[in-house]
Length: 177
Image 1 (cartoon, rainbow, N blue to C red):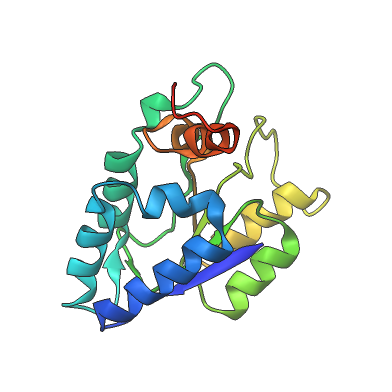
Image 2 (image 1 turned 135 degrees about the vertical axis):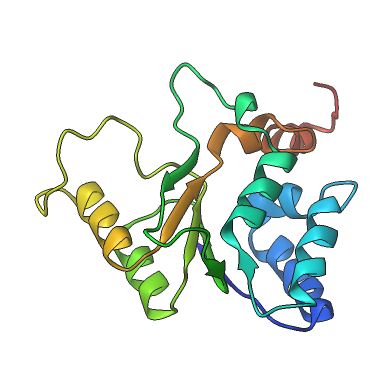
């Protein structure tokens, strides 16, 4: 399942979208609707004055919500995985996905997304080359070609307070860590 977020001028519309987003994509609901709603306030503050948000602003908000040091450092690959060739571009469209596959990337290109948030990192093992012979390598090459940034939060979103781990354990009627 993927979600597209189009940056808009009216911050009230983004709240409506985020509410729908929570219903349809519960994996990211704990991120977007944490207790303080600080991310939403910061996000919509920027929306009210421009048609997009600078990439560095988005990345700093992600890192503030779920610092990368929370990720499983011994094996996970989180954070900014594919950086655009333009320094700190304005992001107007974000695609959220669980896994970045070739069809998902094709949709991101079709929708002119500048940023893909892929929960699972598309680059997990070290790459020795970038060729057209492997689908993961093709994804990275195509992102670079189209100037698409890729960010993966993975285990940092799992470990954060009110994150995915706590959301999963809530199914068992407990909120204890």
